Length: 480
Image (cartoon, rainbow, N blue to C red):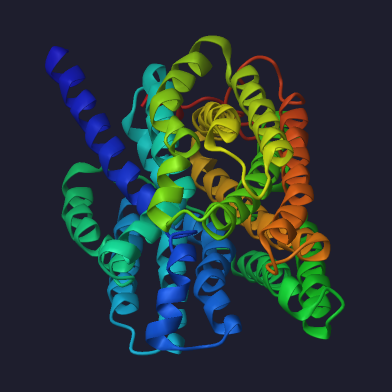
């Protein structure tokens, strides 16, 4: 018994390390390019439109293929597809680092996003299978800390590497990590499958096409104008395809995303909260990193260091949040974190001036950091515990897709508010545009907190399929 417990503990540690590093790589590349854009333009040329696509090409493919990646893992093997995703992501990172021109860089970024879309939703399912149920809160806490740090520290890592080495190293960084993870995943992770149902190709096409249209419209809106033909076509077509996806999934025998999952208040509430949380957070980081450099005069590295009370806090608090979620349930921890994050963003909007001192900003950064840390780990726990173990890959893919869509939506909405109320003409113009945008971000995160309150007070148990009795297989999966 002792040897078996030790073996399971070792497997859990390896799973946490492998999935944590893989998740960090995928999450980091969301915003890692933003502070490197001036150097990329100097080396490769390209107009502002081309530079924007070095960011949005990754976001687009990542968002639209997440659920498909999760479905592939459930059907053909989660470890197998996880390794395939890492392989594609690593190769595309090397191609981006060696890109001879802006077009090839954009293409490499799109392939990067496809690889990330396959491996990212499988990190949670593989971790869940390896960790005993009693210790999953702590494991999700550490995973959430790493994920939150990666999302928020993208501008710092990109700026530091660009400033002290070269912009190519924001991509080369992924290569040795990927080359180490591939054999480790093969040797240390156990293979698992989902329901074994055939791939839902019609549902995949409808969902991917719908998400592509909406995200494309959101990304292009601030550049082409919200009444532009291409933008409106993307938004309306995407919405129509998603409506068709819902209609189809209600009636399909083996849908990619069973609509019955949304009957669960826990599943619906945490997914709504995730979309709104990333909407407020992504848009705020996008503007605040520019504010610290363009208005307050910090270098990319200096700006990143001054944001550490926000970006680094998950490493300290998220593991504690995971333990708390095991003891008191995820809902109060997540709700507290979201309301703290909203308070921090609102405070930043109030104190932001052209010559704001760091002392004035510090309390808001600390509050926002604690709030983000309290969200990540319990949110993952709520997502994974709100569905049957066989459907956890689908649930993870759907949640990650909504996060990415929320991030794209946040940047688009807050950039539009910024452009309408201010601009880059002067420091005061930037502050005038950023303040109402931050207020909008704070409101979105507060709405996420309200959505969390609709989750049942007790930690939900995984629902079983209708009329299905417990089996030895499902009992074993529940405790694994």
